[in-house]
Every structure is written in C-alpha cells, then in structure tokens.
Amino acid sequence: MKTIRLTMAQAVIKFMTAQKMEIDDEITPMFAGVWAIFGHGNVAGLGEALYQVRDQLPTYRAHNEQGMAHAAIAYSKTLNRKQMMACTASAGPGSTNMVTAAAVAHVNRLPVLFLPGDTFATRMPDPVLQQVENFHDHTLTSNDCFKPVSRFFDRITRPEQLLTSLPQAIRVLTDPIECGPVTLAMPQDVQTMAFDYPEHFFSERIHRLRRQGPDTDELANALELIIQAKKPLLVAGGGTHYSNALAELDTLASQFNLPVAETQAGKGALPWDHPLNMGSIGVTGAASSNTLAAEADLIIAVGTRLGDFASGSRAMINPAARLLSINVASFDAIKHKGQALVGDAKLTLPLLVSGLEGWQPTSQWVEKAAQLRERWNKTVDIATSDRGTNLPTDAEVIGAVNRAAGERDIVVCAAGGLPGELQKLWRTRFAKGYHMEYGYSCMGYEIAGGLGTKMAKPDSEVFVLVGDGSYLMLNSEIATSVMLGLKIVIVVLDNRGFGCIHRLQQFCGGPGFNNLLDDCLTAEGGAPKTDFAAHAAALGARSEQVANIQGLEQALVRARESDTTYVITLDTDALTVTSEGGSWWDVAVPEVSPRDEVVEARKRYDSFKAQQLKNM
Image 1: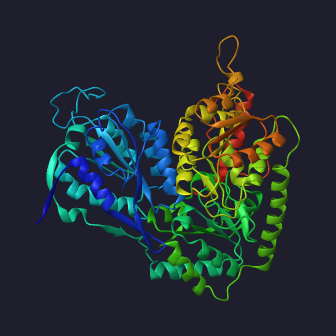
Image 2: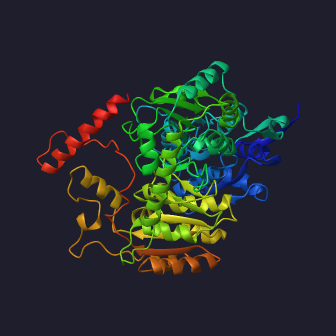
Image 3: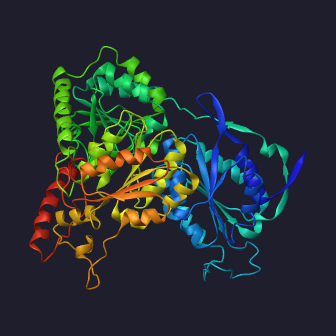
C-alpha cells in the first residue's frame, strides 16, 4: 500500500479537495472555499495547509467569525446545498463565535464544515491562552459548545483518526436527511502531527444527491387520502427547492388545480404570478392562503418541517383537516399527526400525478382560491405603494426595492419585523429570488448572508434589507464585501430600536419598555442617532441617506449602477405593519399581572390556546 506523509491539517485539506459534486451533469468541487480567521490555535497547522492549496481551494479572510460562517451558510442555501464551504477559527473566542452560526445551519438543515482550533491534546503547556479549564472534566473544551448544534461532532486527538472521521463528516454533509453542520475540533498540536496516510484515501470522490423513492403502501394510502378530499391545499416548503422538484410541484398543482401556499423556506417554489400561487402561509401569511388553510379538508405539505410560523402555532388550520406530509425525513413527516409519505419530492410528486388521474377538487374550491388570490394581490399592490409620507412603512420600502429588482435578483433578510412583511409582500418569479433565514431568525445574518449569496450568484443583484438593530449587531462583512469585490446593495430601515418586539410586547399587554431606544435607559441626552451612511462609508462602501420612498427609488438606481457595495439608509415607521393576512402566534402571556392590558391579553391568549388544543 502506497502512503503519503502529511500533517493532520494537510490531510484534512487534501481530503476536502478530493471531494467533488455532480451538478447538472457537471463535476465541480464540493468545497468552494474556506473562510478563515487565523489565531494561535490554527495559523501554524491549518494556515500552512491552506496556503499550500490556495490556488485550488481559495481561503477567504473575513472580519468576524460568526459573520463568515453566515456567509458560508448563505452560499450553500443559495445553491440548494449542492456546494458548501468550510470555516476555521482559532481556539477560544474565535471558535465559539461560530457557535451561533452553527445553530443557524443546524436549524435550517444546511451543510457547513466547521474546523475550530482546540487546546493542546498533549496538555503539556496547559493552561494555554484562551483555554477554558473545566474543574471536573479535563476532556471538555469550549468547543464542546458545538455539540448540540452540530449534526456530527468529533475531536481529532490523533492524526490517524481522520481515516474514520472524515468519511462520516462527508456523509452527513451530503445526506438529504441528516444534512447540517459538521464540527471537527482540531487541537493545535495535533494539527501539526504527521502520519503516513494511504494514498487511496485521497482519491477523487464524486457525490450525487441521493434520492429515496416512497414506500408502496405509504404511496397507496396517500393517494386514497387525496382522492377523498374536496378542498385540498398544497403547502410548499424548503425541501421542494433542495430536491429540485419545482417543475414536479408545478405539474401536480396545475394538473389538478391545487392551490399552493408557501412557507418562508418554500417561497419562490412557484412564480408569484402563477395562477395557483396563493402566497405565504401562517403567522406572517397571506389572507388568501390562511383563509384556505382554515377551511381545507386536506393539507398536503411538501418538504416542510411545519414550524410554528407555518402552522399558525397549530391554531390556524382547520381542526377537521387531514394532513399528508411528503418529506424525505420521517422525523418531519410524522409531525402534527401527519400521515407520512416518506420520499424525495422529485421522485414522489410524479407518482401522485399518475395515481390521481381523473380526480379534481370541487369547482367551488378552485373558484374560491382564485377569488382570494385576486383579492390578496390587490392588497399587496396597496400596501407596497408609496403613500408620500416622510416616515414610510416597511411595506413601502419593500415595494420600492421590489420594483427596482430585476427578474433574477435576490432579496436577503433574517430577523425582526421585515421577514413577516417580506413573506407577505415580496414578489419574485426567480426560484432563488427570496432568501430568508427564518429557521433560527438570527439577527446579524443579513449582511453576511448577502455576501454569501452574492458569492453563489454573482450575476444577480443582491438586495439586503436590514433593520437598525441587526445592522448594529453585525455589519463588519460590509468591509469584506468591498475587499473581495462582491457588491451587495444594503437598505437599512432605521426605526430607532427593535420595533418588531416592541409591537409584540404591546400585543401581549406590556408597556413600551427596553425595545425602542426612547424606552431604554439612556444618558440624559438620550440614545444617539446613528449615522449609518457615514458608518458604511467608513467601511469602504458607497452610501447615502434618503428621506422618503421617492428618494429611495432614486438611490436604488445609483446603487444598481455602482461597482461596489452600496448602502442606503432611511428612517421608517416602527409601529405600522401590514394588518391584512397573518394569524395568531403562540407567545405566552402571564396568567397574573397588575396591568389590565396584560389581563386582557391573557384572555385573548386563552381563546387561541383553546383552538390550538383542538389540533393537538
């Protein structure tokens, strides 16, 4: 057996470069690059290994470890998990900064390879700089924080352990069911240790999406359930994208006149103007979709984990409705008392089409769906139009950006009130034109996520919509985007605080407290007015502040013409949202309070809880 002597770090990188993916009949590297911020825990080991392959496997230097990991996540999400990136940071805070991003990847089922530096396996120089000493267990390090937010975790304490660990890591990263973040904690001394690895370990491996067909009995039961239905509603989730089953979804819906609602992750599964696209569903859903969900006798969910925002906290859907859940993961398919049809959507949906020949919903149901859709589209037109005020709503801003976006441009967002307004109001014909991180709803994802999205789709204009709160949490990747020549357009909506949670606080009976800057503890002069345009300019971007929607529309023209990242900021209304559509969200209200407003809010809460119990 021929061997090659490599350090552990060199072996990891060499193995990564040997992994390939087949995408649209083309062989491409599985790993498009490595994001790295070096420190004493990874610079000598992984840093040296990455330098040797810098022309084959690009190394990108970011400004924040969490931010670079968000960029890696957005890259994979934009490419439907067909390519991915790795992230490495030093032992200590550099690595734990990535834990939040690992949780984002875990919740959203997205592949990222985390390679955090770790403390010495030999323990000879302990305690070293940045080491977290555990008094009762010397095997624990701060990297153990990755365990609950990783789909696969290993600590490589001997170089030869890679022979069994790396294949398992790649299996998880490419598995449609188990897909998610993988963490290989890498002690800095072991990174530099050498071993004689078998040469065949580094042979090229070509990976293809594994597609699992449905069980025969489950398929027959599913067909029987659908044939009995008179008022079905199809719900498209993110799995329709990852399975590349959009054409199959369209065929099923069109052939049988099935109205289609979209989750946050599923948005874009059908063009917005498709005659059967009813819009978004759930807490931030369209009135059209939610009305149908409340009356449907069958919900056919495709590729969704049915989180509380999609299901209206289980209180929105008709309690008498049956649920057929088509999902590649049985873990998700059985939720909400669902009748499971476990299988890949691209393989499963055509089998439904052939098995349903001759069946149709009632004509009254089809006509009602069309009427609701027409009514909702008029609502969107009104909500997104310019009212001509100097304190525009989020909806007006969304309308202006949407009008400026081209057919294959992309909007990116993550947290606060914007995701709700965007899910209701953003219109796209491009399947990847809507990029929302709403599994973990992580503030700070937006700008870094926009950077990763641009890396994946360089020919698309990427519009990042971000509130002032999220911007202040994590904005450093503006400088990275300028440094890398990856232009994104960022629109900062400044409502002077956390407007979304302020509104939720009031809905739950609370006073304005610690959310809007006017309601926070401050010095005598109050909280400063942040000049976001000046800040962005200091990071190297072009920027400007505008006063209203007309000014925003003019600035967006300049932003499109810019050859570098462009930031536009404007003040917005913190209180007004699109009232049409939406449903209840289960946010617990205190049973006892001296405030009458809380007591009344609790009564409302209890009435919705009663409805929720009917669906349990």
